[in-house]
Length: 439
Image (cartoon, rainbow, N blue to C red):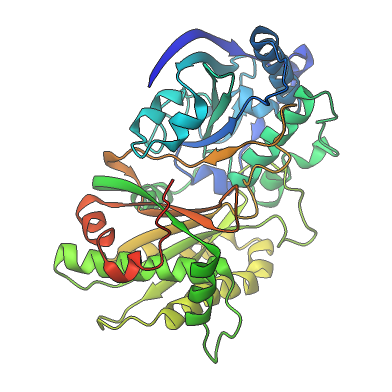
């Protein structure tokens, strides 16, 4: 598919009062998070009875984006000394493009490397902190009238919850509704609860860098698990210690098991294996924080499997996955007491010490599912996860889980070391649970 860039510009907040705002402080969690772009892709099919004018639609998107940036003004700025955000007049890179082809045909293709042409910048790799925009957007218009809105959000200040609330606010402004934040004073509460350190210990930054970015060639594949497969996995994941595993825990444990087995075969070694899961702090803190609070308000639940046995029990892994979250939840009062540094040491040491196989799993099942992301054309037909098929030194081995738009299944986008993936995707026991329809 051919993608032709038709325009590039910087979109800024429409209110000049924004430029006079004081610098927006980063939280401690933002400080230790390496800068890289995470892509979010929303595809909209043009309704059959629609009379939308493309020129008018594109103009409206820019106007509504400017309004949303009045609310989320830090996204228009740049980071300063890994401590705060300023220079709100810099703006957001905004690209418009025409795609020669029909949206449905493009999404249905098995080969997805062409999708990278829809992105405004390269995701999943380390980027300069002080000079890089915190948000980049590309609007792609297909020959059929369909539209793909792609946001690349800097993980330095945006986790999935922040990205989700931002695009929902933008969409609300675009369809003429109220997209304003109920309490703007809560935007920066993260840095009040978890103030930045000055100076921040270098070992924190290097530890996070080594955890999140790994050398070697990585490959990404997409697998779909239908409702029946998920039910079967939940049944297999049950145990006396854990009687009611959720679909997220059961599928996470299943993917961890076969990634671990594939890594052992590919490397010829059995190493301890670590699984990290981001945990949204907002609903867990007391008092609860709104989802629109800006920043990386996420902790990490860490599960460790030390056994070298070939017979890895799914129910045991499911218990470890759930136990890690329970342990993390129990530690929330300690985190809020102000002992953040020791808390982080205890949380991340298992994942960064010694030679281990490290995997991450992040779930979009209750966060970025496309609901309420209606720009005036209805909810998206597809919400896509994309990672480059092969890249050296990039974001960690990762499982991303998201809802299937048309049924009750779950899509798993999996990135692994290339040799490990070659073993993983040919394991017959694993494939027995995968839907034949991977599209």
